[in-house]
Length: 111
Length: 113
Image (cartoon, rainbow over the protein chains, first blue to last red):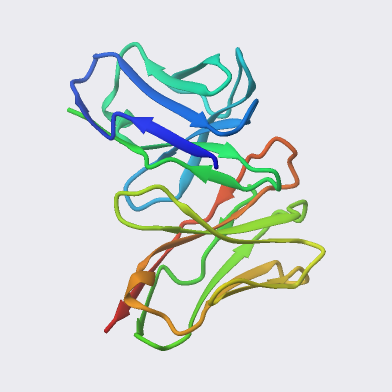
């Protein structure tokens, strides 16, 4: 069966520091992968999606970037974090019917 | 712009009652809709989906109804249990093929024992 893992689960970082959130998917090959952000008490906003290795599409201009170095690995990064980058970051993979299956999330607090 | 929204931000019910959570969408190109359940501190969990060629789909204790005429989606939960307490999101695909989902604001469901 397919599984998706995100880490770290919780992260507290100072403003201006770098960021790296990792996501891996097991049990499926060449999945479409997604990074969403959820602000407190809000819905989910799509940040990036990837249809394959090295292929990244950005949905919104921002301080973040994404990379897909391997088929089952999706990384969210920043060189210098802003306060506004705080939030709950969710990685997801696309199922056969178009549904998304989410990981457990990474909660980022920028101080 | 196009959006997916919910009529009620909160819903409180007694254990054993039936719950109905509503969602309005505005993108007429959407042909696929999903309901998710999100518990505190966790990622959204897939509940049930429906395509635009259907108007009703049933799962275990849940039913999704789709009214394309008025662009309305609802989730019915039968015999609601305390474990059903969570935030519920509707999502629609906007007719896209690459899997982008647009999510509604969410409804907080609280089930009282």
